[in-house]
Amino acid sequence: GAGVSQTPSNKVTEKGKYVELRCDPISGHTALYWYRQSLGQGPEFLIYFQGTGAADDSGLPNDRFFAVRPEGSVSTLKIQRTERGDSAVYLCASSKGLAGVWNEQFFGPGTRLTVL
Amino acid sequence: DAKTTQPNSMESNEEEPVHLPCNHSTISGTDYIHWYRQLPSQGPEYVIHGLTSNVNNRMASLAIAEDRKSSTLILHRATLRDAAVYYCILRATWMDSSYKLIFGSGTRLLVRP
Image (cartoon, rainbow over the protein chains, first blue to last red):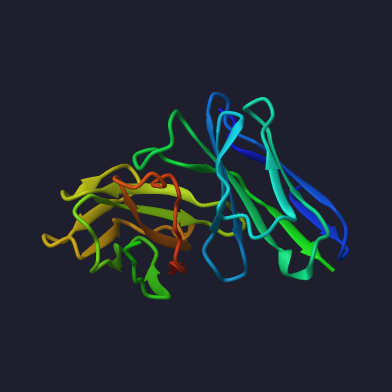
């Protein structure tokens, strides 16, 4: 079946602009996660959704970052007033049921964001 | 959070076994050991996980030391497709935030033809 998909695959923007990154999870997966990966580093947790609600947004770096999942499926990560330091690969993952230590997370290919 | 230590990089020849080590000396009794890998230009993918006993699946084997302070991911016959960054991750069952995957820098595996 279809895996997690993310659009766009690449996004180049200018400092100060607003961007939206989209994630389509695997059908039926209720848990959804966003991670950010800087060059040469492992991914870092940003936010976790269970259904429509953000159960944990402790990883969002500041209030310029916001994410929604209005119908419990597709999620959008929104970044306002982008800065050069926001340049990274943004990864989305989903998992079945209640998120837990036994649940495998399935990752999308990521969106590479470049802020000029 | 308990920490893991992995070598930055390792090399292997194609069709030979590969043993990727991970040290986790501060692991607690309820921490599961998970391995994910990340192929070039892709998101991470799950490989295997275990608690105390050695585990096998179609992708790999996981050997866990008796004191659980280290583990080894074993690829029985490396292929070029196995060239990736391998992450060893501890996940605490008792924590409400066990859903978070906490990645280190991982081990970059190079496979020579």
